Image 1: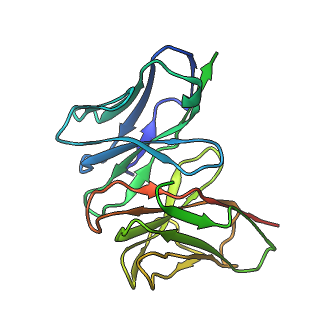
Image 2: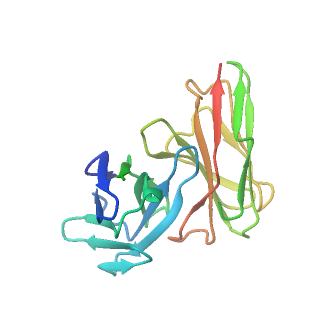
Length: 112
Length: 114
């Protein structure tokens, strides 16, 4: 079936280093992707999005890269801080029915 | 949480009882969604509604029911037919129905069936 998934379930990062979280998708018809951050016991929080007509988009300390050739997107967090510790999800919105499809998530732990 | 409220935050029910989870949004969004999240997993779509008085089944609708009588409200009922109802339930909304638009989430309701 078509799905969105993340390469690694966990990522440990030293405070101050850059983090890279990867995500692979298989639905070539998807044209909109979102990264969410979820802290324990809370709802997912929007971080950044990207549409399929773009390769890169930058926000505050975050960058999302989209490689449509290999169906891969990544989230880069610059100068990772303790407050960045959370579960990160990539999600795609399917253009045929507008449903949001989530991967399983990557748990990021920031070491002091 | 962007103007989306869910209540209560924690809910306990006995097995066999129906329970209704509340979701309200003041963002004037057309579309609303219900997701279920189990430990260590991503979100799975239960039901969604793109306009008032209309809703569609998601990927795991069995044992659940919804209504959309008002634009601001999209309550979810977990019925006794749901075999494994204990989970974290998340409501979301997006501005445009029938479009690829960002979904914003509420804080969630953790349901535990005893």
